[in-house]
Amino acid sequence: QETKSQTTRETGRVTWYALMSLGLTAMILGSIQNFSCKTITLPQKSHPDRFGSLDSGPFSYRSSEIIFQGGVNSTSYALDICRYYSFLSYDLGYIWDDDPMTIAVRVFAFMAAILGALGLAGLLAVPCFGVSICFWRCYGILLLLAGICQGMSLNIVNSSLCDNNPVLQILDDASGTTSLGNTFDDVCQVYMGFRCGIAATVLWLFLAVCLLVLPAPSKWNDDWCSEHAPTPRTDQEELNPTLKVRMDERE
Image: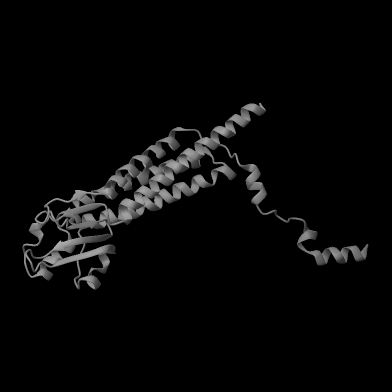
């Protein structure tokens, strides 16, 4: 019986480490997709020797040597750090209204991060406190919703950030020519962040299936938890040393 119990605890330990590793990996990959400026890219096709491009994520963008005019007196625009789209009014002096798909992508990006964090927070408590099968399944549902939201945020390729990027429209006006947008590809290309988002979606969904199918592990780290947990003081005499002294005097 003791051997069986030890085997069960060890299995729970290995399962927990594996699930937490998958969850943390999914969280990191999802954050790269949704909170960096490397989800999609728009290369400037008319100047292949200069490799100009506009990289974008749901919330931020970055440009690299976007050429306004060719020839000897060519001018370019480069912003090598990620800047939020909300700063367009400060950076370029324009105000841009987001389309509904862009807003939806940003909402799904936030929801994926929040739901994933809640699910992982629940898993963190398992070693010390264990978990009932009800809560275990609830964590699985949270991670399932995180995977769905992560996948929905990939719709950035169907938003105006991809086919009608506001930065290019603003630079069109700033350059004094309406042909700047024609020097870029009509359709954006997926970039590193988009691939990370696909991987994060798969990991979230796989992790959710594991929690919905596998049995809930029992707590297996009692020694560490009891060592670091505060010891409650319930004795009335310990809670009130003055009362203890008075009682001793009466005796």
